[in-house]
Image 1 (cartoon, rainbow, N blue to C red):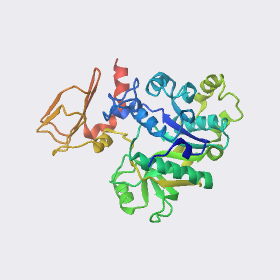
Image 2 (cartoon, one colour):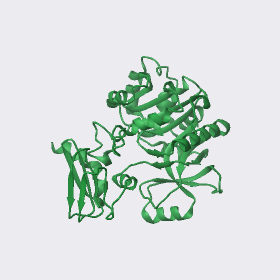
Image 3 (tube, rainbow, N blue to C red):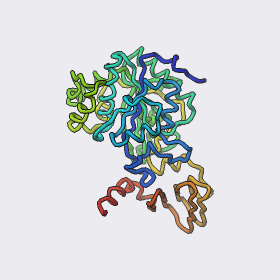
Image 4 (tube, rainbow, N blue to C red):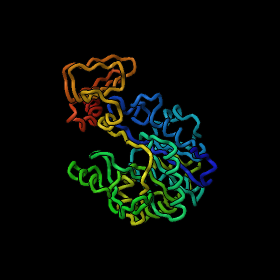
Length: 361
């Protein structure tokens, strides 16, 4: 099944969030070219390009917005040249997802006050596009009929400590959309095991659908300091927009939409996604997507040769040859002039390597 633009309501808009820097994937992802603009999986396309192509099958370009750091405006244009310049929303500072959603919602409200807003991350791995499109359409229909805030959940396939979890209020067999009971961010192994075995929890996919007026009402209720910065402004969608955003962004809270709104609202629902999904948030998650040899070694290239090595993960540029001999439990990644070798148990420290390198220089 392929869904066309005409099958969605004309006042449906999609916002692609592309503001992160992906520091857990350094050096392949770095501040000059973050994860969303990189081809970490070596598919031939960056994450954001794949996201755009998937979304553009059901949303016309004029109803797709990308929100990203101001420093990534040029690379966004390069990777998505089809997008109108005014549809790239530039953040002067990183202020997390609540602020970027507030910005996009206010901008869309001034175009179509009763619009439906779909929010998707730019750097996730999705399989089964037809199922994805159908789930988006079902989600749009639900919020237009019932209101509320809809998030997407994925049925867990394993015990996973790197994902957020959503507990459904009633786990009715076959029911696609249910009310949300609780959110839990990255539980420890013992708790993740309980979640997995209970059947009452879904992975939080970070995909949202709501009416613009509903999300703005909830932000006004739970994050009024943020709401008040945008309230009654007349600058969005005018030449004064950039100056207005640059002026207020430093005052915006650095808080996620999950913590700031979804965990507090009593109008939250979850749709059980039927597509394949991974947030590819860590090298561990990357490893789960790749084929492993008999010794649990993983590589993105056929030119990486393993000998007498176990549980190693290697990501090198195409055309590079690497021999991994006599070592275990290592993460090895290379890009440009940088080579990173880290023990698997220390993976969490990778996010600080680029900062440490700049400090040393």
